[in-house]
Image (cartoon, rainbow, N blue to C red):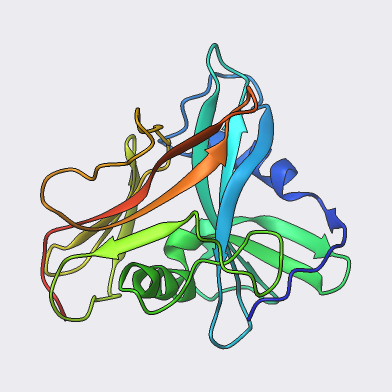
Length: 219
């Protein structure tokens, strides 16, 4: 179980993301600095209790229209070998000390737990409270057999795709789109999905897809 500490981070997560987001191919802002606000998200627990796993939703008000982004992050007490390209930045945690923040799509612990969530083996946890499941975040899986965690990760203008050698694709919806009726419908050929809610800049709530798993193979 992850323990959520109420403490100070220097720099803050939003400060790190303000510098990092414009470097992503799926970022839709202009040339100016993002204007970010935390809008929601959830956590997953690391079974070993070493890695913090957070799927954060932030809204950017810098452009003509606000955009909501899904930003999965992991927090580690030491650098992750071979993941320099996925480093978002470093922070000083008021309780835990130095923390290395990574794009969770490149962190094997986070990927394994996301697959376990889709597969129904773990629960989504509240973003801000320890040991409290988050019922607003849902997952489903209609495939057969166990899911592979052997993914190759690549960003593009549409988001982030995690692909197995056999062709199964787990795609994270980096730019979030609210479902018109609040009931997200995954594209044809999808065998798994994650859906959740976030706060809109106007104070309302939106719901949409966070991730989809497209037809494929099993390990």
